[in-house]
Length: 171
Image (tube, rainbow, N blue to C red):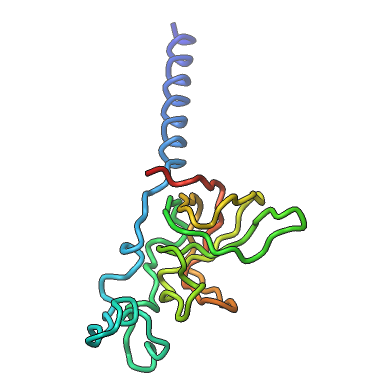
């Protein structure tokens, strides 16, 4: 009897640990507005005749005391997330496989000046290089987010991600 009870407890513990591991592996669905700290001071409203994007993107943001786009949500550090966005390629190998890119919330970001604010761009490194068939399509990127700055030629970020999954966004 003691042996069957021990076996039952062992099986129950194994089931519990397996369930915990499964829960830990499920990514948190993240949207771009959740990457702006609630306490961040927003930029001033757009001037008449300017596009809404121009009011959010100001190269003098820090100098003027605006913090809307320059702060990271610290709670996202080391969080396993799934984030939708568009790919801006940075580096690929000789075969055209991509292993690092910028993830942005809308198509054409970083291709036009100015780029999105730093908390609306994520520098992504793929665990395994992949072929990206079309950069004009949105993707889901799943991986571990870090609140770590990246300064590149075309954009600055306050987020980096180590991605283990990349999939085409299905509408």
